[in-house]
Length: 508
Ligand code: MSP
Image 1 (cartoon, rainbow, N blue to C red):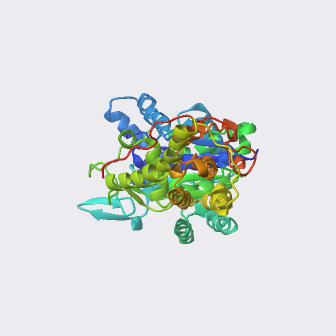
Image 2 (tube, rainbow, N blue to C red):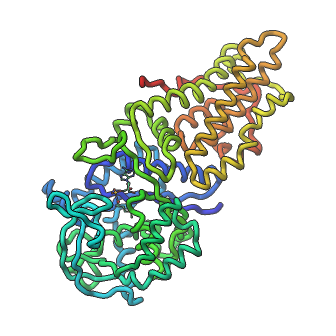
Image 3 (cartoon, rainbow, N blue to C red):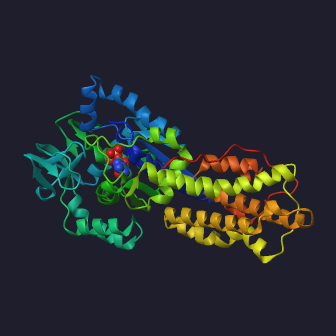
């Protein structure tokens, strides 16, 4: 079995998780599940980013020590992995020993390789972004200095600091991007990064002295390590990278899934740290867009934060997973509105997918004692439905692997529409005595379509797919892509189990 390693960003647990965080995680989960369908051995990592001034301030507000504070709030993100039905195989907290040990080892390696020197930092810093900005990157609004890109407040900072020789890596990075053309996706992000690096890289401040909630710099504990150097290392510390154990077979990671706001850290700093430490960079970084609340960016001050738990409780988990994967172009911004959500659930999930299953199985329950009929389809219209998924399989797989998850989902739903049309045209419920063979053929072909289609829908709607595949008695170890064209077929004579309504309709 080939290994596959995928990660989400690790989340700042200073505030409650919102729909943007859930989106990063759900999309990574869909990919992890798809790679398992393709029979990869998948390591899927998520977690929380717990050091830095932002967390220290949030803990102070609650009158708690940062560690006690993190122990409580990190749980919100751990709970969210359950609520989202993530198939993660690990959850890392940057306050764990395996992480701290790895960051210290990486730091020492960089020192040994003369990649780090001490000097003084003076410049702008945003606590909210935990990022340094140059004069060109800030603007003034109502007397406050703000980052032009994120709009968050920046303050002037002057302190002793260790620096990483980032400038030295400029041409290596540019070579790396051109030798690995798929390293950054989508293209628009790659172009952004390449032009940023071409415009010149300055050495990077990688330690702070004005607060202490972080990993102390080895042998100079006035300093704590810059939270981004600390956080990025999670991707290898979760593997206990320096322990040289079996888990290292997962490195380099196949995909880091991130939001477009954090590409500079992942596409410039991270590969530079790794190259400097003689570690291979990850294979691919994919930056998705923003989830907007209506037409706007979510923010506390606007009061439009979308709470994933509330949305899931109102609409259902698979429903929201489906909506996000189909309606948001992966890599671009997308919005969530109650109307769009209800429309999508009603038309695709209830009227198309759910209806097809219900129409076919209700005939089987009422006329065939719930048993799958015996038949051998020969007419080209029937055989077409029987093989509809097989004939589209290569395209579907290629589309998914280009990370066009929205197109993959759309193509599947179009196939459901085609099968619904076939059922409308052939009207199996109206076929009586002298046409029972024909009726059975129609039912069988649609059931086979459903078996294959729900195998492919598992990454997106895992709970509902399981219900359907269970009802069709598809064995658990026959639910991979390989089983679509191979071996298991729906067995005539097997009983189909009755299920509740799959998808409820919503008012819009
Ligand atoms: N802790 C850093 C990541 C370190 S990774 C080594 C961080 N955390 S975060 O909690 O602020 O954001 C985590 C992810 O959530 C980011 O990828 C970010 O893009 C994503 N989202 C936050 N708001 C979002 C939306 N409104 N929409 C989509 N994703 C957004 O950054």
